Length: 294
Picture 1 (tube, rainbow, N blue to C red):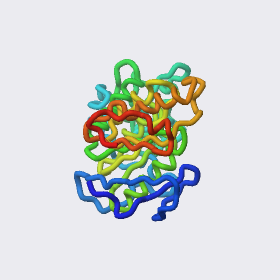
Picture 2: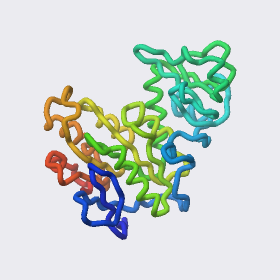
Picture 3: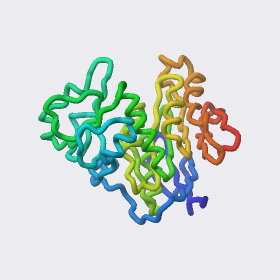
Picture 4: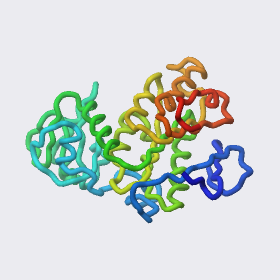
């Protein structure tokens, strides 16, 4: 891999990108090889703050959906992207109806949903009077969403970068994406704070088919959560920024936070790259598996 022609720099307290060598935190980014030549520098989404939000590019056919979730096609529908929120659904999207402890999203599958432009539903029970596409899954819809995310990760042939840390995840994710875009790569980065189980799943499901690099944000509030997310996203480059007092209610001490953040590196494969903030003693002490690059 070739290094950048100059180091990009960033400050954890005041995010910026520059050629200056004077800021405290210096990160040497790598040019990631992609499997296809693409000169486009941005995602297919338009506007500044929603540039990498879900778009209407047809990522998923009904056959893809059924295969990904192990479901049954009840009614055929056109290809589209995926949403789990009826309040923000866009024309051309499929609605994945999640059944939670307190809310069953199947209750929101109404005529108004189709009027909003929804072209299909993924759920575990067929709803009356729904005339658009429908793929039925067996049992737990959350497990089916995770299956779809794993399917999306398996079919994505580009590189995945994952960023975690008590602070700085979202801004650093955006800066990495901007830096790589400036070199001509087609880069997708996850939307705003999509960093929990649902967010990372949707981030994977939403990666454009023609992207070469995906930059994801991963968060946690308990031991074991980052390990689950890295197993789902299987990042090629893993970044830990900072260990701070967030989540002490579940992790008790900074040492506990460091152990939980360290799950980002725990199952890195030989050849994977682990990036640690050397200015943070807790991050610096996190071990890297043999064969992974640090």
